[in-house]
Length: 73
Image (tube, rainbow, N blue to C red; front, side, top):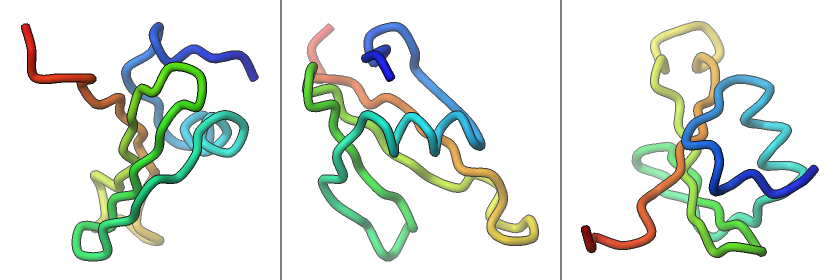
């Protein structure tokens, strides 16, 4: 899969899982919030995978969101 990290800001469901598997590297896991953080090996852009509808059966569909690179405006 090509790097689309600068062109997308959010993916859901299977698209999120496929992008993680084919392109991103896991950097840490937050066991309290069930969030997993990833980084693009090409751009350094960081991502977080979470489950916004965790009340659904099986934890709901995963969501992958791009994090800001910095707090600068």
